[in-house]
Length: 316
Image 1: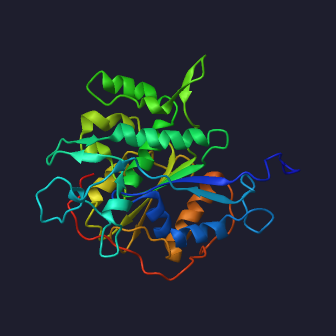
Image 2 (image 1 turned 30 degrees about the horizontal axis):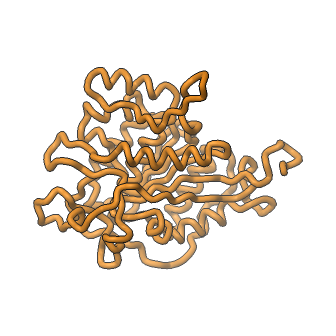
Image 3 (image 1 turned 135 degrees about the vertical axis):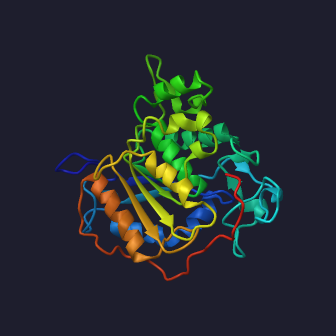
């Protein structure tokens, strides 16, 4: 079924990939972002409700995959410990380590430069989700913490000519372009999914600060995808310098192809029920898609207090 005006399928949804943080799962991240999901559903309803997107008249769909690396209790230790397996987002109400703790990669080593062990598996999982939706692709990706870093990487990997950057860097000891992101059509190799239209990083960071030589191809040339960065002013888990390194790795300017930075007066959490920060996300998405909706103060859902992380020495 298609709309009569522009032949956009009437059931076409604004599909967004949601990447959870270290020591979370898709299920736990969905629970933590319940208020945000409710607000976005109100901001981007299905047609013919007021405020619907012309390009996506079917409304909103958020997809929450779980990372493939199951974490052990030893991966979650307080900052006072010298062990390499420390974690984040596991306060008193945090997830059960045995059932809800996964990561897109593990940090290997205590001192820089260190590597991200299992990153290939993390990208394989993401690529499989992207490929499942290749005929009705994602419009964007949103991630928190380690997932915020991954959101920037995914946006980068799907951009035109990024493979060439990896090939150049690989000759100098850099990481190989992930095989899982390559689709062989029989005539030409292409990425498993079209480029993202936007990406959003909450408390994310640049992998180049871990090992510039190994991971630089994600960020040079700079990420062209429109990206919103949301940072906590008192985040003690991911330092501002790590987040700003990712910001600096994105193109400047405003509007499409631009970067934006929003600060919230909190720590290491996603401000999912605070109107101003939800409105910033809604307006960013509308701007990127070229559709204004007068969203102003986006509806904010419930009044549940945001969950914060304990101070940790984080292995990602």
